[in-house]
Image (cartoon, rainbow, N blue to C red; front, side, top):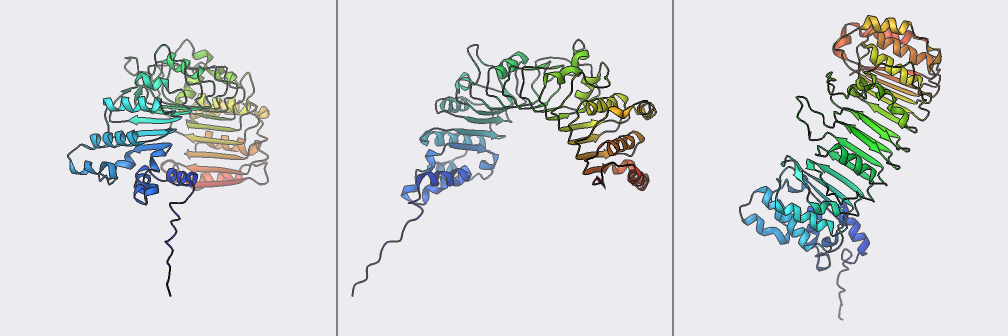
Length: 444
């Protein structure tokens, strides 16, 4: 009797090509390349990957056991040159479009090969590009970068963005993030207006073009003609900010350091700063830091804005000092002008010049009959020290919020240790119009 054995079924090799691609894209590049040893059919599957990520995670292990770069373990090379050769070989073997490319590492300085990589990408339809070599103080982007016409998502760090005169923007760009990018203010404004599909913009500082003792990141920031922009985050020092034709901008975050030095403010535009919100007709979430609040209030604070922020639902203020009249009046102004607030977050700071007495006199003179918090559900206050103005504000919130669910209060332990029980006792005695409101008090 003869027994015929069937060869084992190679289930891995016979997977559908689209499923193989999905599996490879879920793996780090190092592991995706290693699958080339699984079988003959898998040997070159990885070369069709539409996304390539080269970062510090990839190179933390100095041993390169990929078949085509094993020789690198046998020769003496710096980590920088080793990585450059790996990227070169990967691109040389790659077959097909590269839709996503990331080169984000502290191991590389500026070198001519990087310019060649970008030339290669510009010819292969890259749509998502993340680039930053922090070992290089400021990498000058080559001209070929500005011909990446299919870009949809762009994130640059430590670069110089200086396009040629023929550059007409990225017509398909949806999100843009600059981290310490050297760019002129006029170029930034033109870039935003020449990306008609742009929805998200993040600016984290800039290399300064100025030589002041305490220079701007930007002398001014102008966001104009951005019909689809919905999200804006700015963490930088600037002289002024302008909005024009941003009809869909719903989330705005403007923060920077907490310096009290306002000498950089553009004094000519200071009186108009408070009216910046009139250019944000549908804003839903507003996040502001101490410095920008000072900018807005340098020429004084009205009882309420000339326009109502009907769409504003989330208000977040950081490093607000309840010992400064200008901070308290600005907070009240925003609350009075935002009838549909659902969430308020406030992070307090210690005042450089505490004027609690004047703040209390100011609050006593206020008529809060025009304060309406009928939609407010949740309040978070962090680092409170139990001062009288802080408690009076909490009292106002409790008295004017019929739908309030929770108010989270986190104390500054260094400030309230001696009187923590007294603060808690007083909070529980405040009148609350919401039958479901809960005060959650804890030590930070």
